Amino acid sequence: MSRSVEDHVMFTAKHGSWKVADKLLDVDDRARIAHFLAMVSNTVNSKIPEYLTGVMNVAGIMSLAEELARGDLTKVVSSLKSPGTSKKLGDLVFEDDKTLKKLLVDVARAVLVRMTLSRFVPVSYPEGELAEVRVVFPFPDDHVNFTAKHGEWIVVKRLIIDDATPMVDVARLLASINETTTLKIPVYADIDLEGIEEWFGGLKKVKKSEIPTVIEKYLHFQPSSFAPAEFEGHARVYALRKALEVIDLPLDVPAKSLEKYLEKK
Image 1: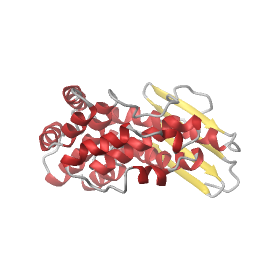
Image 2: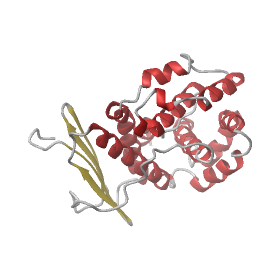
Image 3: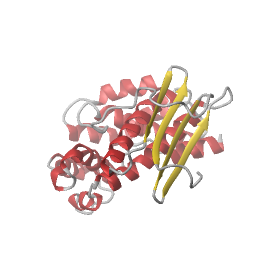
Image 4: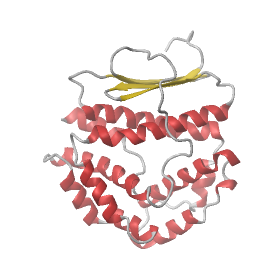
């Protein structure tokens, strides 16, 4: 991106009935940047499953989420972690090659975790999603486009979509955009990620018997100790992400898995 480009954060998407375009130019207020990034994250996360239907049975994953969403949070998380759930996910991805199947199961697991836990706790940020066309599309073609320039932070993530574009490639880009926003929101929202990690006592990958302890820590998490008042809801999502990381479950679709799948396919 040229250095003459004004500081901004922008997200646009034009594909089929999905049309959204918004641009933040008031980047002097760091909190506004954080809120905008959170809306971008919510937006892309809500669309990812739609672009995975060609490689996995998303409706089946939704049904599995409903099946698992019984009992308390600890029981549900334990069920998400179980080998039986992994086997069911394996049956829901459209791939026979073992290496490619594993990559898709990693993605399917993240979709399942988000779908299941959304019935119990907030998995998205409080802002809602971008849903309107507020600025002119930067390209006439179908596309997904995320750009940002603020000080030393410069990012361009873009995909022009045509008849030859695999829909899973769109999902990959959306997941990559989510990863970027996930990294940057705490920077602009002053969320204490180190403190959140310390809250979980430096736990790494825990055994199944330790899952109740991790969930108890999450349920007693006080976001006011780790973020300004307007970002307490965001801090709670980061606490959930950390709790799941300790249990070795993903809250976010891994862009790298989709990238490797596309490379090897």
